[in-house]
Length: 369
Image 1 (cartoon, one colour):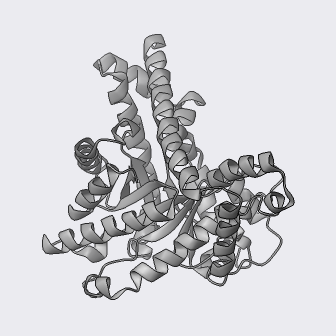
Image 2 (cartoon, helix red, strand yellow; image 1 turned 30 degrees about the vertical axis):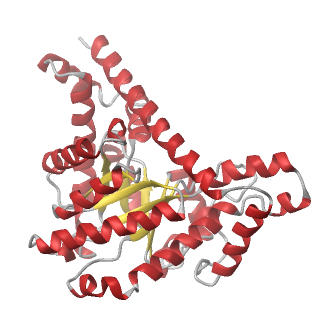
C-alpha cells in the first residue's frame, strides 16, 4: 500500500473521507476494509445517503419494528437511525482521531435540511445532535446558506466542530471563512480550548461542471468547447488560493497563536457526472496538502486504480484557473449566477431526500408487525 495512489494522496497531505455510511457498511466490515486498504480516515453523510441506505437494506427492519412498538414518529425514528450509524462510525474511527490529534477520524452528521433557512432551528438541532451522539470526533454539518452562516459561528462558539456544507461560490466561501474565524474567536473568549475545535469547508465540485457544461454545449462555439469540464476544477483551485490567503492574514495571527486550526477545504461531489471524464478527475486534479476529499466508493476505487503519479495540482495553477473564469465571463456565463442556482438546487435536493427518507421509514413502520 506504500506506493498506492491513495497513499500518495495521503502523503501529500490530503485526507480521504468516504462519502457514504450505512449500518451494512459497519456490520459487514466494509468500512473497516476501506480504512485498512485505501487510507480512508473519515466519513461524511447527508440526507441522500441515509435515504439510499435505509431504502436499500433490510438491516434496519428490526430497529424500525422496535421503534414502532415504542410509538415513536417516523422523524424520531430517522434521527435514531442516523445517530446509531454515526456513533458506530465514530467508534470505528476513534483510533485515527486520537492518532491525528482530532484532524481526522471524523464523522459528519447533518442538521435537517428543513432548517437550511432557519438559523435558530439549526443551532438548536446542532446542539441536540452533539449531545445525542456524544462522540467528540463528530462533526455537525450545517449548510452555507445565508441563514446558515450565523448558525455556523454560534455552534463553533460552543466548542463544537463543524462541517460547513453546500459551498459553491468563492464569495460564499469567503463568508464561510469569516464565520469560522468569528466562531473560534467567540469560543476562545468563552474559555474553550480552540485547538480541539476543527472545521472543514465543503466545496462542491462536479455539479459546477454539470451546470456550466450544459451552457457551453448549447453555445457550441470553439471557445465554448475549449472550456468544457474546466470550470469546476478552476473554481476549486481559486477557493484554495483564498484559503491560503485568509489563513496567512495578519488579522487571524492572534487566533492562530491561541491554537486555532486551519479550516481545511473539503472537496465534495467528487464523483464525475459526465461518463466521458476520467473517473478520478476531481481527486487527482485537486490533490494538495491541507485538504479533504470525500468520495463515494466508486470514486475511491477509481483513485486506487489510477495509473499516474499524484502530486500537487493546485498551487501552481491559480493563473490558469483565473483564465478559465475570464473565458467563461467572455462567453457571457456568470459563475455567480451558476453557483447561486446550484445552492438553491442543492438545498431543494436535500429536502427532497429528507422527505423520501421519512416516507421510507414511515412505510416500513406501517408494514412492521
